Amino acid sequence: MVGMDRLTADLHALCEFGRNEAGGWTRPAYSQVDQDAHLWLASRMEQAGLATRFDGAGNLIGRLEAQPGGTQDGALVIGSHIDTVPRGGWLDGALGVLAGLEVARRLLESRAKRTRPFEVIAFRDEEGRFGPFTGSRAMTGKLDLTLLPTMRDVDGLYLSQALTGSSLSTTTFATAAIPVGAISAYLELHIEQGPVLEAAGKRIGVVSAIVGQARFSLQFQGRPDHAGTTPMNLRRDAFAAAADFASHWRKMIMAEGKGVAVGTVGVVRVEPNAGNVVPSKVTLGAELRDIDDLRLNRLTELTGDLARHSAQDLGVEVSLRVTHRTQPALMNGSFQAAILDCAIRRAYASMTLPSGAGHDAQNFADLVPAAMIFVPSIGGRSHCPEEATDAADLDAGLNILLDVAAGYLST
Ligand SMILES: [Zn+2]
Image (cartoon, rainbow, N blue to C red; front, side):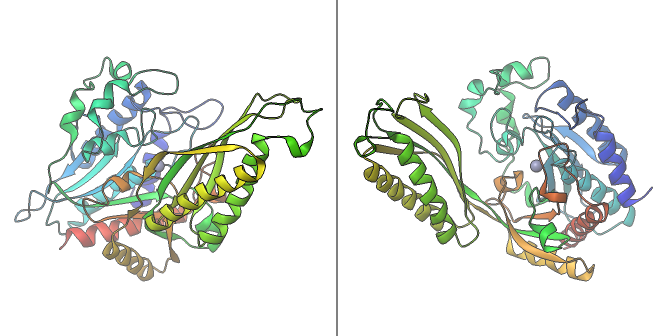
C-alpha cells in the first residue's frame, strides 16, 4: 500500500475512536478516547520510523532527525489536531496530522534530502474544550499558565479533573513551551470547512491569513411598559433599537468589509421576554472577523457609532464592551508562492483565500514562517457527521504538502 491508500487507511482507522452511534465522531480533548487515539497515533508513528514523545501539555510529537551533516535545531513542523467537536467530522484536523505522517513515510522511502529535523505534531484541545488551542498555545508560550487551574469545559469539569489518572497535570504544562530556534517553519494541511473552493472549482487553497476576531457584548437598555397601552411614539423599546442596529450593522459590513470581513449577531437575550411587555433590555453577542487588522479596528469603531445611533433614534441607552480580540495571523509569502508553484506543476487548479476559522497555525505565524493548504469541503460542510472531501482532493492536498515539505527540507 502506498501514499494515498495508506493515508486513507489511517483516516479510517482513526474513525474507530469516538464513533457516535447516531453519526459523527466525538473525541473531546483529554478524554479517555482522545488519549486512546493519541496512543494509537504514537504507535503508527513508531511503525513509520519516527521517534515519539508526549510533551507536558499532552501534545504528541513524532520526529525524524536530519540526515548526517544536517542541523539538530530548526525542525520543520507539520501539525494539526485529532480532537473533535461533539459529533464532528472525520477529517477536521485528522487529515493534517495523518497526512504529515504519510509525508514522513514518503521522505524516508524516497531518501529525500533532509538538512534539518522534521516533526509531525498532534496538538491537544484545538477545538477548545478547555480553552482555544490549549496545546499549541502551551507549546508556543502563549497559554497563560496561571489560568490552568480555572479552566473548565461546558459541563463544568475542570481540566485538572480531566487529567486525573494521566501523566499530565496543570503543572506539567509549563514544560511544553519550546525554546526559540527549536523549530524553523510550520505547515498545516486542513479541509476548508467552507464552500469557497468547491464553488470556484479549485482543488487547492493557499491560505493568505487566518482572520483576527473582535467579539462584543452590546446592551440596549430601555423601559418595560404595557404592550397594549403604551403608544408607539412613547416607548423605549430595547428590542426595536437592537433590531435597528443589527440591520444597519449587516449592511455596513457588506459595504466596508470589501467582501472579506464577516460579522454575526449570534446571541440575542431579550428581557423580560414576555409577549405583552415592551422589551426593557436586550443583550446582543456579536463578532467580527477580518484578515486586515486596521479594518477590524475601523469596523469596531463603526459598530459603536451604529449602536449609539440606533439607541438614540429609539430613545434607549446602549453600552458596548469588547470581550475578546485576536490579531489576524498572516501566512508566509514564500511558502504561499511555493504552494502555488507546486499546484501549477501538478496541474491542480488553485486559489488564494483567507481562513475564517482559527487553526493551530495561527499560534506559530508570528514565530516562524507558517503556511496552510486547504482542500475543498463537499457542500462546505464541517463540524458535522456529513463532513467530507473528494478522494482526488485529499490526494492533491497530500501531494502538495509533500512537495512543499520536501522542498523546504532539502535546502
Ligand atoms: Zn481543525
